[in-house]
Length: 92
Image (cartoon, rainbow, N blue to C red):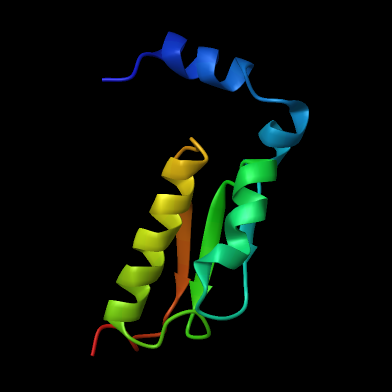
């Protein structure tokens, strides 16, 4: 379990740019998660908003999220808040 002190210590290490980056959710074009890496690395991005442009099937969405997680791990970042505009397409 993460304590409040651990959270405060983590946030205390971030620059102002990284703290502000946590407030943003990025929508990006295409199916390549690598396009988001610079934003995750440089700005400590808070989340990603995925749409049909990013993944047309559940399998593609799962792959994209796994790739985003690898980017987070590589850059020692917290998990992203994920937003999805799928309008029922992946549930089929």
